[in-house]
Image (cartoon, rainbow, N blue to C red; front, side, top):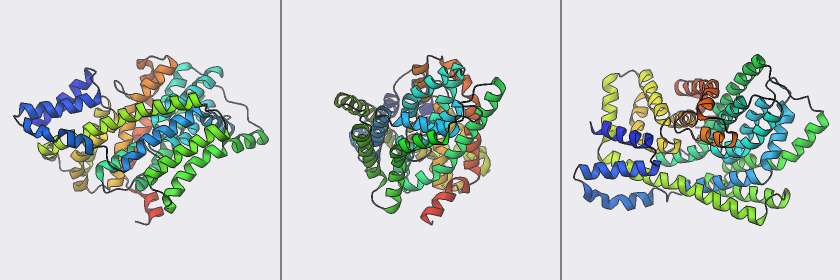
Length: 429
């Protein structure tokens, strides 16, 4: 009964429009007081403080900073031109370019909203100018932005690694490669079919000389992901330190090489990054207190008992977990879902024999579907704000891409090598 009350409070307050951090903190504190255990609240400040003091979580503000520097420093423009040179002449034209641009940019920022708000502006203008349907352009822009948090580096994987504590960030980064590329492939197929049906334009095939020019211009930008992953793999720096390196490298590109970031612009970038980082880390801090509350009241055990009373079939249990994650994604921001649900579902995951790296990919993919589902789809809202397309229309446009992500999610959930082959190949275990 208590577990049901907590779920109703969390989802109900979220539907009413309360901020995520307020919802989590108010739910935990309110139930503690209702149960007459207000004295336990003395640990609230401690739990909130320790929730953001982990070394791994330091990567989050620096990846956010790196993404903002890239969006302002001319990096996104060069990525878009490079992607256009590669696949602009394919069926679907700039729709395919949109996907490839997001795939490349995902190797630098790790954040979907940064992709949608940064590359999205460039992609939308180009597609509108080329004669694409405005709603279609908005739909693929929102959908392709979800590739970012799956292909490394990834902020959600950093959060999951911190929540689990036994899976390295680099292993999760490697696990995201194949699912991320499969997501891009599924979206590209959907764009191909829709474009053929609606006869959307294709770009003229570029001469090889022009392709080479755009490739050379993009090399410094493309080196970002090489520096990050190679540095972690070789052991030059940790995943957290890689985020710092990515920020300094993006700053170098924007101020020295491309010279598109002014001093005033840099101040604005840092300020915006601080605001975004504070919002994210505050959610994580409050979620740590909520996690303490859940464990103290043994709610995960009650949920596990309830699920096992319904079925003991491993396949059904995994499907139930996926259903709950996607349902929560309709109302709660992805980071909060990972922090709330990880301690609840880990015992079930261990019981069904799912690898923790595999489960991390399932968690992140489920939260990506949440980014594209109302009423709290962050990518939907970001694209709505830059395109003027209504939330209802945009929600309809992303449905084919949501279906593609869901298929990739099921593959990851029920075929372990899909997400664990590459980490085992590279790390040897």
